[in-house]
Image (tube, rainbow over all chains, first blue to last red; front, side, top):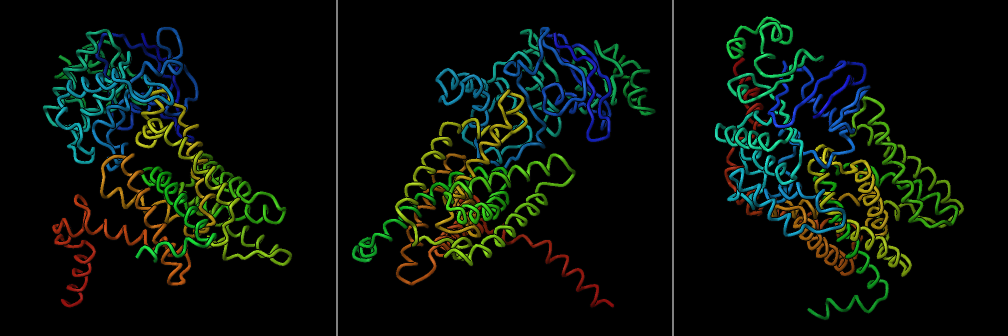
Amino acid sequence: MLNVNHLTVSYRSVQALRDVSFAIQPGRLTGIIGPNGAGKSTLLKAMLGLVAVDQGQVNYSQQALLQQLRQVAYVPQRSQIDWTYPATVWDVVMMGRIRKSGWFRRFSSVSRQVAAAALDRVGMTAFRDRPIGQLSGGQQQRVFLARALAEEADIFCLDEPLTGIDQKTEAVIFEILHELADQGKTVIVVNHDLGEAITHFDDLVLLNRELIAYGPRQLVLQPDNMHRAYGGMVDFFSAIAA
Amino acid sequence: MLQLLLEPLQYDFMQRSLLVAVVVGILCAVVGSYLMVQRLALLGDAISHSVMPGLAIAFATSANIFIGAFVSGVLSAVLIAAIRTRSPIKEDTAMGIVSSAFFALGITLITVIQKDNKVDLTHFLFGNILGVSWDDVTNTLVIAAIVVLVTVLLFKELQFYTFDPAGAQAAGLPVNLLNFGLMILIALTIVASLKVVGVILVLALLVTPGATAYLLVTRLHQMMILGAGISLIASISGIYLSYYYDLPSGPAVVMVAAAFFILSFLFSPRHGLLTHPQAIAAPSPLWQEVKGVLARFKGQ
């Protein structure tokens, strides 16, 4: 169980998240949703120590998550990455094996096998030696998912993995995320889009600078919750909740 | 031909300068690759200008000028980071403020001590490779050995950090320590390079060979190795050119490196201007707008 307790984050003087508390169950695919600027990515980053927290704690199995980052595989937003960096697909996937390898060590043959299997799982083996700058958005996202798989983590955190990708990639991503959840992993996905993809999630965390609701998808997607999060533009979404 | 290559080597000072130029060239190419992929080329420029006060103070107090320059360079990097994180001022502006202030202080100090010491400002600015002593050679070799060793040992962590700092941090890597370590490597490299090219032209050795290689290969370690090779050739040919044509040696090395970059820019199989003619055929957006403005004038 991953517990977020009273998390408050500010950027300079502006409060981005106020007193957010919820719990995420392992074995369930959890989506973090909310309108633009609701603080979804900020929440994920704050949980992982990537932005400073004013107050609050994040615990995994009753211990601070920040002490257990080796258990975490994080996939940043594609837009945060410099895709002109001189690296091949293989180089990026192998980055997922760095913590397992340890300082000053070369990659072991086990690491190579794990990385190769991860690359195969996302269907990108043929692109192994391709420079990352020559990939489509969906392919880039699959490479990052392969890197996360190579980390053999317990907690998977993906920041907007569904933005700007093709149908095939979306299908591959959800197939793998469901598989991870079925293995009892904790899987957290920041999701910008409220389209059909939302039905893939078991649980949702609904945010708008503060927590609106969390829990099973159908309960969170109630019209009054959506109205509080999104204001007037919710009629469209209530159909999905049904 | 062989005679042409061997003749300068009979002089002790030419042996020393070639050795130092080659070592520094390789070192700069390797460390400069990290600067380039992090888009921190200007930080290299800022640190190199900022070593001036340290050089001057070390000179005036007869301390080791390598140490003086190193302390000064690291201090500037720390100040730049402090301004960037503790105020809304962006990194490039912070670099401009700190490096110009340090540079001004350095020039002032050197002008003051010039009265009592025999120092030449131009040697600091543009290097004085012919004045390299065997002590300098030893210092440079020690620094180079340290930097290359650290780069090799920390290669995968530094690669992860420079590619995806957030991902590296989320994986639990000590990213602030890695970043500071990188700054130290850069400062050490710049200090080792001062005798060869001086404060002003260090940047060329840091970024030009790496950028030349970047257009030709696809992976970071390939970029470092090829960059080091290009740098090696540029250093040797630059020194020979300077010997035979009586040119200043630092600028000669830099111009050869720049010539290599131009070749790579024009003929790189994947990115070359001439090997991908469609890039030329595409109309320049600036020219389009200029034409639009001219057409409007004609219309009136």
